[in-house]
Image (cartoon, rainbow, N blue to C red; front, side):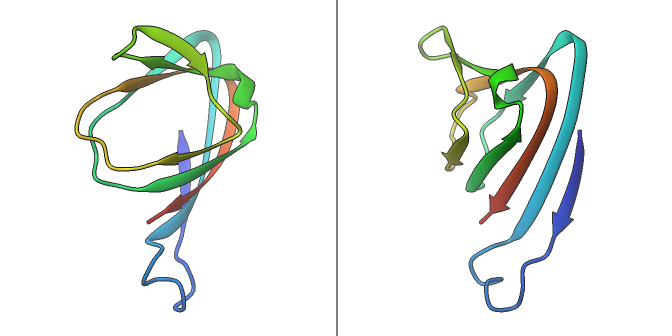
Length: 95
């Protein structure tokens, strides 16, 4: 995964830590990314191939597709894993 970080303008730095453009290509297999506990808050916009990603919910033991955008808040445990296949491009606002 490549991540390009951009610093916000001075007027929004008080609220936004940074912007990120994340790109990833997973071919010929399914990539699994654990989503561990973390204090960060994000808004994620899936710009490319959001249909190729599923989330595994550890609490319910079920898979479901990712929506075109998501809001993630602080997590106290590893509740989900992302399962990726294809080409992805996400725009993320990190608070």
